[in-house]
Image (cartoon, rainbow, N blue to C red; front, side, top):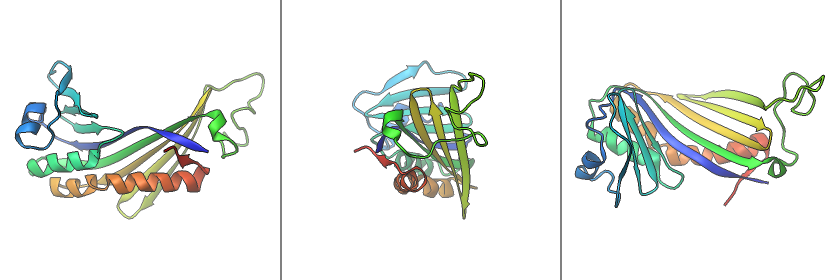
Length: 198
């Protein structure tokens, strides 16, 4: 049984300036140099979104979000934070979502509401979604695991959350992206007996 990686990102909560963190600035700093960056939305008062070379960026006054299924989002975020060392930051999160059809789910455990699973609701009630969530704290890392059992698909989401006090600590936290992705794969196997589709 295997689930496909559908989404992953690094989210840095802090006071970012969307007029600074732009495709042009990233290229000038040699932090990210896609062949042809594309602005997804016109620059707004509160932020900007752009993409290129398999990475998508969103920057506003409260966050920096870098998404990609193939690029190390954490490395990109860490490089930005090292170039802007005085940016006030509060937390770094790495997020991974794995999805598969119910047929791939097989006999893996399903979320339950009390003693009722998705197919056990009374009086003809048919839930659109049943969700199970667990939060695990290990040192400075809070890991939230959610299993979402929908009508046709199953999604397993991982959020690795690290509180930080400055940009240097945030850069180190962002660099955990690859190890967090590996840990998500291990937890996927341990908790719900699923593998990551190659």
